[in-house]
Amino acid sequence: MAYNLTNLTNGGNLFSVFQVANEVTNGWFGLMIVLSTFLIALVSMMQVSDKKLAFASASFITFLITLMLRTTNLMNNDYVFFLVLVMLIVSVLVVHKN
Image 1: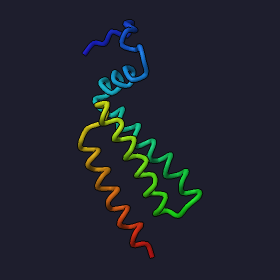
Image 2: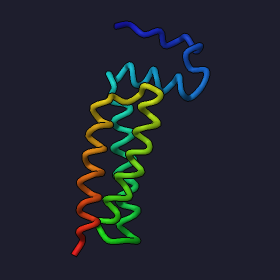
Image 3: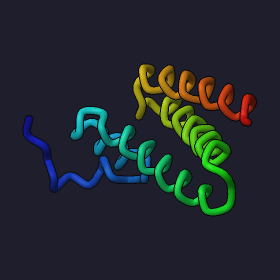
Image 4: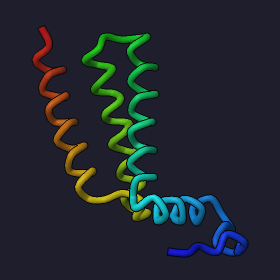
């Protein structure tokens, strides 16, 4: 597939740049945003709280960002369902903390 790299009309705002980047990478752009956000949030929260609470907080933040990306069609439904499943599992682990 050939791309017109000289046409700047598709780069009018940040959202259109994200759409083009997501299209060029076959949907990996949105997933990599979510994974990098999760890792940054997890490492940041592990410095101030225990591991289970940090994982729960990072997964919740990631879930919110995934919902935002899903409403803009930058994320697939499969990833949203996966994050809901992860949030449920982590919430059970945090509630039953020893």
